[in-house]
Amino acid sequence: MPTSSERQALIEELVREYRQQLAEQLSDTDQTLDQIEEVAGRVGNRISQDIQKHLTRKQTRAPRAGRQNCACGKEVRYKGQKSRRVITRHGVVSLRRAIYHCPACRKNIIPADHALGLDGGSCTTRIRQWSAHLGALLPFCQAASTLESLTGVSLSAITVERIAVAVGAALRRDQKGRVAAHHAGSLPEPVGKARRRLYIGMDGVFVPLRESWKKDGSRGRLSCRYGECKMGVVYEPEVGKDGKDSRVLARAYTATLEDAEGFGPMIATLAHQEGHHLCRDVVILADGAAWIWQIAAKQFSGATQIVDYFHACQHLASVAEARLGADTVEGKVWHRACCEDLLGDRLENVLKEIRDWQPRSEAKRALRRVEYNYFAGNAGRMRYGTFRSRGYHIGSGVVEAGCKQLATQRMKLAGIHWRQATAEAVLALRATQLSTRPTDLGPFCRTPN
Image (cartoon, rainbow, N blue to C red; front, side, top):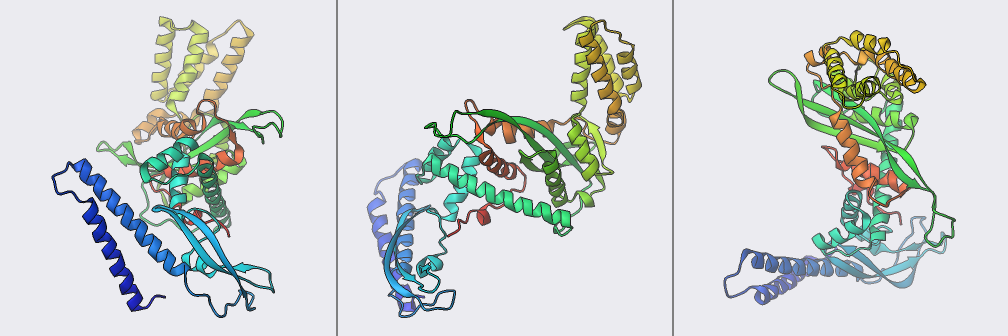
């Protein structure tokens, strides 16, 4: 702890350097705003570096302690000095710290590291936050170049990837802990007022994965496959003047490569955090995938279930093409009439049309059977006239957009394939980044010593 006189001496030294910088950098002539911006940036950066250098040097160059105790209670011995470099937002800091050794537990102790709050990483928490954020948004090489362009901090693409994966994995572990707490009934209640209506949407998109592999071929040939990324969104709509739900006010995402058994508790936990159990009206809106409705029945019993209207129309288009030909006038008329029947709660007309169709080929009979079962099995989820009268959304555009933003735009770039652990970490980061209230990544950016 510096004395008041030492603190005052440090302030005076920094003020002298600040004045010198201003004297050197400020121009006697008029400048453009861009030039002024550059000057201000140079002076500010230099002063920030000086402050950082003086303060860290003050703490790390403290005189050798006469007596130090280990956490085990035994006295430690002075071992010498050890150098360390740490990357900060103001540049690289070179430190020399006193190191002590405990003969009892055979551990090394560096008091200066503890005083500075340093962990086992080579970057500060802020640099890791930036790296994780950019690494989830962009390919790792672009994330590294963007970080340097915006902040002047130079990291390799491999370092950015390593940091992003570590932070994403820590975030995922925390989410798993919340899932366990929700299952045990100990997850804290959400803060804020209860919402009138919440929508819960789910969907899947396939992303390219690879098995363990090295470029030098030491682990065999590259083996790629596709894995399904399951994405969930919980969102609150704005109510229009006509009483119908309109734009989205707030949304929260989750995504994972786990199967439906693992994904179900994750979307249930997210919905709890968003207050679905306090909500007067919960709507499940998705396509006709069986795993979605199984999760809905298990995790959200009592919620209104809606099959996306546009998916239903696509199924009708498949029947129209098989029955009346592609792009025929008759097919378009038939398709339009069936879509209007769906909107008017006249599903029985659609089922009759499909049932009365008697195709000759086995392939078309199989199509007829599949589509009939699709509409009959989802009859309760296709009461679109009733749903619209209540002001509900009947299209899953928010869900489709979530799949595109969360997975497709980052995970399915040309020529890219992912280790599953890396993909899982990046999905965890992107899900919180794209949510209206993203998670603070700071607590997940610490590296064990």
